[in-house]
Amino acid sequence: MSTDAPVFYFAAMSPYSWFSAERIERVLPDARWIPVTAAFIFKAAGRTPWGLTEEREQGMADCERRMREHGLGDMSWPEPWPTSDIPVARAMTYADSIGMLRPYALSAMRLAFKEGANLELIETLLQAARSCGIDGEQLAAGIEDPAVKEQLRESTDEASALGVFGVPTVVVAGALFWGDDRLDEAARAHATRAGA
Image 1 (tube, rainbow, N blue to C red):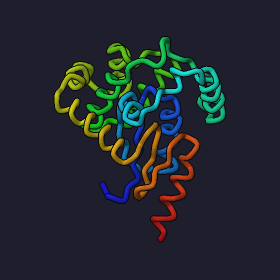
Image 2: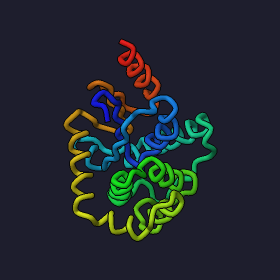
Image 3: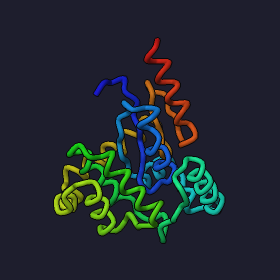
Image 4: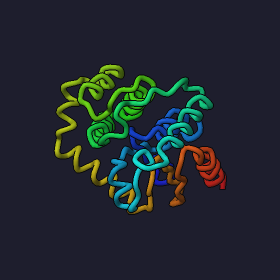
């Protein structure tokens, strides 16, 4: 990977991360995807996820509107939501280790927000694995692998150290672009840098 490649920090429990993940291949195809644990990103930044605040209903309505605008259909929220994103973050980290992060992450997030599946449950994580050709037993073992857990911690700590305080965030040459609504801006910044 080139050190100049954009980096896409995301978390599967975040619908905004999903919206960006569905589009980033088109606007930033060389971006390096890095899953993080959103709960620790928020904690490190002293923030509370909007899904746990009085902004919940407004945020959910905004997500439903954006989903339709992105041509992704209608939202089907998991119940409960949000839940712990540690299991799915570990599953994505394992998928990354075998070169299957993008298909696995998209499969998991589609299950969550199109079918209302709970990403905290191993059954959901195994369903996502099957849908993209990952062996379920290997994924289950990978989630418990100390090396996978350590890699996830390192990735999350690295993101926090760079100043990432929410997901999705794209980093282009040290500049942070936080939010699904800034994906195109990040792409333009990268294109400008590449053409300089």
